[in-house]
Length: 270
Image (cartoon, rainbow, N blue to C red):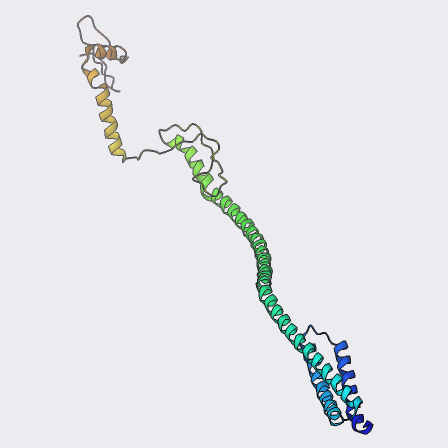
């Protein structure tokens, strides 16, 4: 009997020890470890079935019969435990799948938040860089505008105002005060001008000289023509007009004598 059960008994014992070592060294919560334990159990089950067949062949003795019954009972218990383990593993896998599915939107949201933060940082960097470039361009335009303003003042603006001031000497106009001013603004339509007093200087268009002379004579005739027929005015004009020193009066009601004063001729009165 011992020779019949020796080989299967040793193989079964060795397989059970290996199965126990695999169970102790494995984490049953992972799919890989559960698969390793299940493979080890299949190999152990085969060895135990061989032992059961050997015990069934020697079941004529009481010891072999009791061992056979114990082996079958242990096989059923372990088989039931394996089925429960498989069911728990399936439930665990389903729970993990549901957890992964529920965690995926959170991961996506977290990734989206990270992406938004990254885009905002890059946008801020671009804004700062653009602001620096804009400041440099503004400084360049300011220097360019200052140079153009100085050049325009020297060539056009100040000479024009000098000519305006000189106009009062050449035309019959009165220029009270002419001042230049500077407007510092982007929009000159809404800029504040200092001093606030402004003027409009518009000379009349000059006509040709002959027309101006005729118009002046006509204006003088219109103004003084009526006086030429007034006897009082004519008497006053004759009174204050003066006399020639060569004219002498002979008496009341007599005309003055006319003297000949030509050189080389005798002088006398006719």
